[in-house]
Image 1 (cartoon, rainbow, N blue to C red):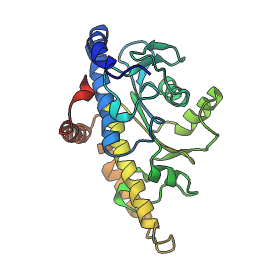
Image 2 (spheres, helix red, strand yellow):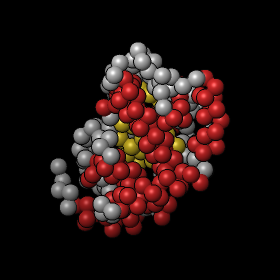
Image 3 (tube, rainbow, N blue to C red):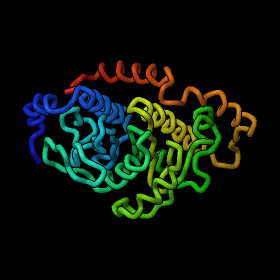
Image 4 (cartoon, rainbow, N blue to C red):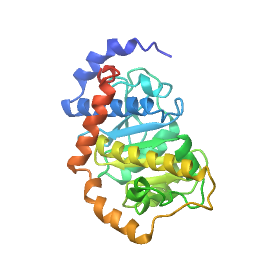
Length: 264
């Protein structure tokens, strides 16, 4: 594997050969990776976040296969097209095939979604393995309960023929629980997708904690409350809501206290 110090040497050249708009997306996506590491949402080197590159080409950015999330920076992200052709790979590590299959499917089918985030967290995977999936047990869960779609597990996502079924499962929404696998959120920006993932992960944390005492005594929110929360929070969940930027800005302040090398 090339030394990570090579990133410092390549940083200037990467920034010089991409547009200002692409560099901005690179920095935001790298920040998302670092935040996931900070929140311990990682599964070593095996999960992946992606973001569409601004412009007419169907290119997206994703992590180099072999880097830990806390090693991701704006300069070492890999640029790939939806057909799997590597456009730019500063470290020469390539990408995870399962990451390509999942992310290219959504980027191709849903051009309205600019970022796709996928995790294998303990509690997210645990909820994905439950027959009833996400339960209406908390306010956090109610924000997502009526919007979650599910995709049946078919094995490690290496087969291109799964892509059509994956995007059919997602439908017109942006929240997907991959059965026996993990969580996936998408958004009109990195900020939007991350806010969705942040809340969904928290909802799963609460569900697993609540179930620790057994399922018999769990109190599900009444349908009237489920409907009310959906109505109350709907406008705030859109990608252009000021709440999305406010949430992201606070996250970046938190991340920057641990360093800003993700932006290199």
